[in-house]
Amino acid sequence: MSREKTQPVHLDVRDPRLIGVLDPAAHMEMILTGFKFTEGPIWHPRAHHLRFSDVLGNSTFEWSEGRGLRDIRPNSHLANGSTYDRQGRMLTCHHATSRITRMEPDGGVTVVASHYNGKQLNSPNDIIVRSDGKIFFTDPLFGREPSSGIPRPAELTHTGVYCLDPVTSELTLLADDFSGPNGLCFSLDEWQLFVNDTHRDHIRVFDVEPDGTLKISRVWATLAGDAEGGPDGMKIDSTGKLFATGPGGIHVFMPDATCLGVIETPEPAANLAFGDPDLCGLYITATTSVYRVRVRHAGLPLF
Image (tube, rainbow, N blue to C red; front, side, top):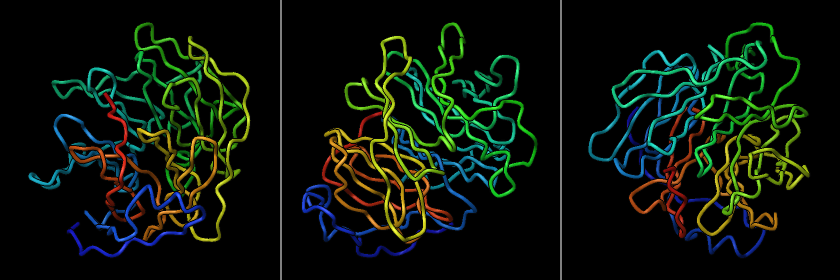
């Protein structure tokens, strides 16, 4: 799990505006390696540390430049995606238990979602929080499959996208027509919700109502390429550009869905997060490692 040397970044330029996203002379730095399947990176905007999951290694790690690496949840129940709520508490999706938990300031863990209409969730996968505190997450079957979870039959007949009210604990099913719902993020104004469908190789977008319900679904972009990797995690930066994992690495889109190109990664990428004190460090969880490349525009703080 040691740090390796940096290497020049490789770009698949599909639109010259990609050069405005990062310096072509930038370097891809391997921060950490030696894991089984890295996922769910999140940056704490005040403590300045990165947390991420090793799903198959069954641990959640915390890393910072000054303190190095530590295992903060050595039995993570196959934790995958995480985020912070508006109070700075970590919310995490767990494949093994089909739950979403919240880590409290005293280190305790609270289960915030586990069932829908009396049936166990499939395997919550990725999660975000809107500025009003409402929690949105995807619930595919990945955590019930042998390759990434614990094989067991599903109780629900759909794979969905949900909204959880943190005050009332009411869980609302927003969409149930996905094949493999995965990463998700809001537009800058939060009036649109983007959701990856891994099995269909595309990103869908929905208009979002004030109460969190969705309408007018449409395919927003297809993630094209012959290299390894597919639609998984995604984030938006402070200029409205969307960064999504896909074939070959991180695909960068303009707000109008024009693909500027791909920031290529040495290993297939699963997720990403903006970090460093200025939020211009793009941290990428890619199979056995965590990488970082500096970009020109900051991401958005999680709280």
